[in-house]
Length: 284
Image (cartoon, rainbow, N blue to C red):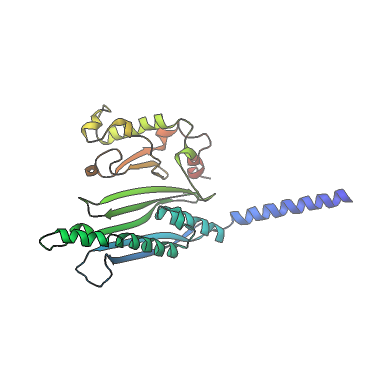
């Protein structure tokens, strides 16, 4: 009798586990997005004088509002918020709360320059305004690739803080939608991948700039070959892995962000045996 009840309990437990797993797999894994758009001028001195410096702030934040379960949606939102604002301290907030706090923090930091502004203004004998206090900030993100298992997107930052020119950088993120975690190079490649992958990056740049010798890249403006190494700044699609090196990373500002596209066929020897590429892009 005891064995009979034990068997019934085991069957019920297995049924419940299978039912939970099956229910989770049956959840709608499509993603619904929304956007928060902010465009405003933040005055350096809050006295309604439009002749004084201000910072032009433009933010367009695309984020998920529905994905799988409520828990899945919350986790995906956390990743989007933390990566968009490049600070995990914001990812515990809702997207709207995070953007509001980010702008409030930026406003406080920008207005802390007001004392320096008046000091610099007094130093100008012709009574002109110190032009270097007019700032700009622009943050945006965009989806680059999406299927049932992978979501790749870019976050772009550009700003001007009174120098000779503004700055721009783009960062990429790849999310395993099955586990709702971000992916790094270590998740894709075998150990000790950096040296051979560096060689592939150099070879790809040689093709892009139509040179046959690695050192010839230096004549095109690259700093040195040792700088051209995997930087974990990549996005993925069904064709290959796409790297970007930002300004000053491997070349001067004037060359801008430098893209390197590598087909999966050229990476076969470096990808892990049970790699995410096969899992994400093999048709079932």
